[in-house]
Amino acid sequence: MKEETISIGELFSILKRNKGTIISLTVIAALISFLVSSFIIQPTYEASTQVLVAPKETQNNMIDSSQVQSSVALVNTYRVIIQSPTILEQVQDNVTGSPENISDLITVNSEQNSQVINIKVQHTNPVLATDIANEISTVFSTEVSELMSGVDNVKVLSAASVPANPVKPNILLNTAIATVLGAMIGIAIAFLKVVLDRRIKTEQDVETVLELPVLGSIPVIDRNEMRAARKNGVEMKGERAHV
Picture (tube, rainbow, N blue to C red):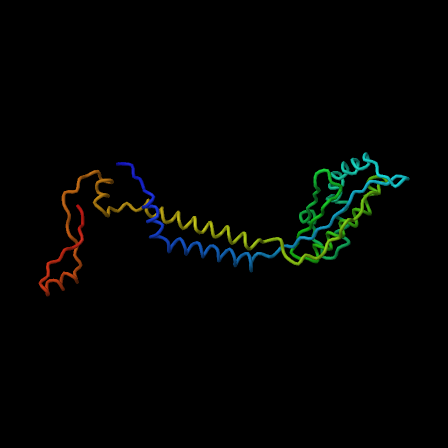
């Protein structure tokens, strides 16, 4: 069998013939994603607070650069302490309705060479997320002096406020991704139908698939048209069926 090739014109022709399928799958996928993201997936809210690791001032109210570097170096240690059971168990006891897996709800990070620690809490209840975030910063700033042997250089830089808008799900992004996937599936189905269709339809198909010459053709005439033509005495010329 000869190797089959498809021209660019044939590609566009395939897409045009199957545009109904492609458009339908695209719209259905986008609609399903929008409905699921809007009404089925429960929204998640994020509350964030910031803690400052501040170096101590000297008697002349001056801050030594070595103390700043020491504070920066302590940030990584403080991040671990914030997520430790020592802090989170107290938070769980102090905040009414807090879940058992608080550690799975929080994210603690800081910018490189920064003295500020960002504490973020995600939960489906925005008020509860805010309460947990603020309680974590409060408990940590209170307990760190005992845990670090008299170190008292932690201050709450900003308290968390109740978030008004959810961070998840991203309805626009989910709908856009579903739209692209729906279109890709529709296009794949369109080309798959062509690839799996082994029927011989034209004279060129006979020569390409069977590698045989066309010896003749039989006209195909519609019965109703043939009867009407006979009544009117008109000679019919039908479409050719190749053999």
